[in-house]
Length: 135
Ligand code: ATP
Figure 1 (spheres, rainbow, N blue to C red):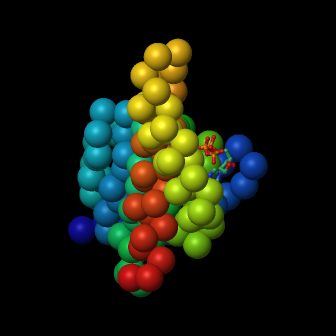
Figure 2: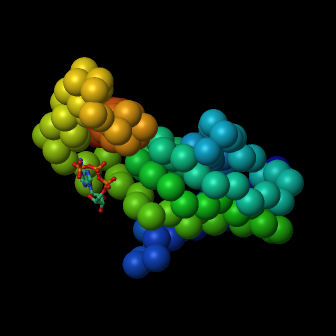
């Protein structure tokens, strides 16, 4: 079986290019596992952990919005707003964002619940990706 040619791009830079056996992508409809030979596809990304399985191990990124394109030749392009590696994540900032979002959700009245839930999800997913640091 072939390999995926994975490119992770933001509008500002190339985050990384990898040869991979598989990628797990947080799409807006849930997690998608992409293997070589996958059908061509365009999908919107959600918030979560992007995992690229390479020969030298798994590369993990927090992503929050953007697009996935699976093209011909096993090219997988992730065009993302942000892609943070475990070591890029400021743990205290993410914990504080989580505390803030939970406090807002406790208030109930006068709170933009969807916005607070989205902030909570970003914070929790950042903490999950950051926890890969010690592994
Ligand atoms: P906060 O409330 O702490 O700003 P947020 O979820 O609202 O968090 P985003 O809007 O997702 O933040 O991101 C804004 C910018 O801040 C992006 O460039 C993102 O990479 C960066 N950022 C946000 N939180 C962190 C974090 N915990 N560690 C490192 N960079 C972060």
